[in-house]
Amino acid sequence: MRRLREGIVASLALVPSVFVYGTVFGGLAVQAGLRPLEVLGMSVLVFAGASQFVAVPMLAGGAPALAIVVTTYVINMRHYLMAATLAPSFRAFPRPWLALVAHVINDESFAVAVARANPPDPWVFIGSAAAVSGAFLAGVTVGTPLGGLVADPARWGLDFAFPAVFLALLALQLRRASDWVVALAAAVVAVAVALVLPGTWHVVIAGFVVSTAAAFVMDPERA
Amino acid sequence: MWVVIAGMALATYLTRAPLLLALARRPLPPRLRLWLRLIPLAVLPALAVPMVLVERGSAGAHVVLAVGHAPLWGALVVLALAARRVNLLVTVAAGVAVVALLRGLA
Image 1: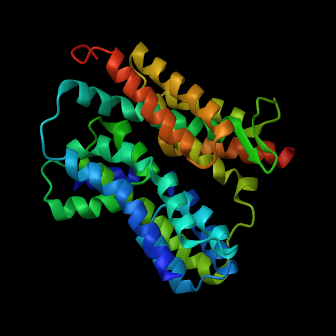
Image 2 (image 1 turned 180 degrees about the vertical axis):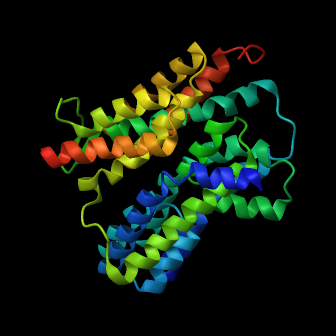
């Protein structure tokens, strides 16, 4: 259980921001007309912050259910890449466990786990997912009756905790020259795509295209 | 409302479970293993860099490279500390503090 604790401790940098954004989501969702049980239910059952923030104004604006579901799917397509990366780590786990672990795949825990080891340690990932989901659900629970605890989280730099964690964890993984090329190419492609496409298409496209192209070009025996 | 929530939950689960279940069991060929190793190197900058450089508004998205753009300085601080293997909590706290400070001054 040392690894489990390692995953929790490694995620503490994220807990305040995840909690505050949980409160903001709870507050916004209630204002948009969702009942408290629906807000918490969505957070437990969907558990994908970015898509939930997008769904709330759509729900409030009376968007068709299918449009909301399809938008959610597209925003969360980046999970395919994370699930593929995490899969070999969970070889020893029984399938019902995998079905549960799949549900808690999230950007932050993915980043924490792959920065420590690749293939990642499964228990580090589970520990991190416990910390992140705990902070998010606690935030939602507090924010639903009280509204967002911080009116403008960006004023306090809290929005910056997310890119900060991703950048810091990326820096730990840049060992070879080829790693730098892949990371820089992905950054350039992602920025270009983010300028023309909405949502998280840039993560899906840059993440998939650049990693796949590099895997074809590089020599698996040497890389 | 619950129908929409159930639809969102199912759509999201379909992005998470299939590959985790499919790739967990079999031994993987070297090029596929290479691809899996490279995914985080592509996904992490794809998540982070647009958050720092791209501003999205109702008028459309554009790249911000101005000296007064706080996240730019936060990112430099984070990268400098992370390169020195400073603890993640300290690194992120420093980045957040720099951004909060610059936005407070602006």
